[in-house]
Length: 257
Image (cartoon, rainbow, N blue to C red):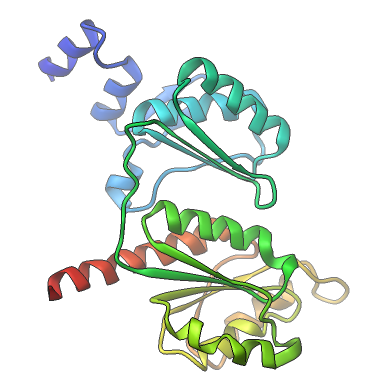
C-alpha cells in the first residue's frame, strides 16, 4: 500500500486509480464505477445510458478509461455520445472512441489498453434487419471479451430456406447468440440443427397480441430444443454469456495444445 501511496504522491497514479486498486471501484460525481468487475467475474463493467444524463454518462466513461483503460457504454443516444467525446477530449485526449449509432453503444479505449484475444468464435445471428439493435450490442460485448465474432444476418424462418442456407456457417461457431422478434422461432430451429450452445435473444419487434417481445420470450423459454434465453432486448447479457462460454472453449483448446 505504501508503494501505491508514494505513486499517488509522485503523480504517477491518480487518486481514482488508487481507489480502484484498493477498493475495487472508483467514485466519481455520477456514482461508483466497478473497476474490478472483469477481474472478478470475467465480464467487463459497462455504463448503462438509460436513466442517466449526458454529463453523468460522460463522467463515468472518463472514470472507466482512467481506471481500466476502457469504457463501454450501452443504450447511449447521440447527445450523450457527444458528451463522452467532449469529456474524453479533455481527460483522455489519446483515447480512441467508437460509437454505433445503430446499436446505441460506445467503446473508448486508452492507447495502452490490450483487449483479450480468444481462440473461440461467437456467431451473432439475426432473424431480420429489425433485430440488429440488441444483436449489435451482443456482438460488441463478445468482441470486447476477446471472441472472434461472426455476424449471420437475415436468416429468419419466414423463409426457412434462408436458415438452411446458413447451416454450415452456424455449425462453424463455438457459441451462438440468436436474436428474433415476433414469435421468436429462429433460436428453436437453429438449436435443432447444431451441436453448439445457443443463447436465445428475444427482441421487442412485433405488435398486437403479446407484441414488444413477449411472444418471442415465451416461445423461446418453451422451446423443445436445448437453448438458454435472456431477457427481452438484453443484448449485453447475451454477449456476456457468449463471451464467458468462448473463454472456456479457448481455455480448453489451450489445454489440448
